[in-house]
Image (cartoon, rainbow, N blue to C red; front, side, top):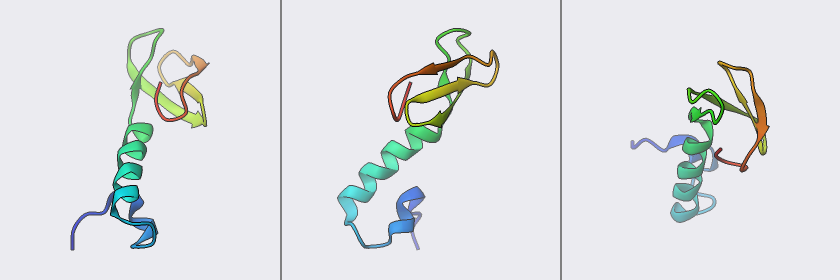
Length: 67
């Protein structure tokens, strides 16, 4: 059995191409991003387009899936 990643919850329902695109987007979205203020790799997504740094506690708007 191969690793399916976060898109494994869809099974075979939507096809391989869409599930691999979703995996790529969700890995980028859920990883820690670099803060534009303190330059630390500590920014996490709060909600769609809203990001918060865990070090300097700055909250700012950005893209939906990455800063």
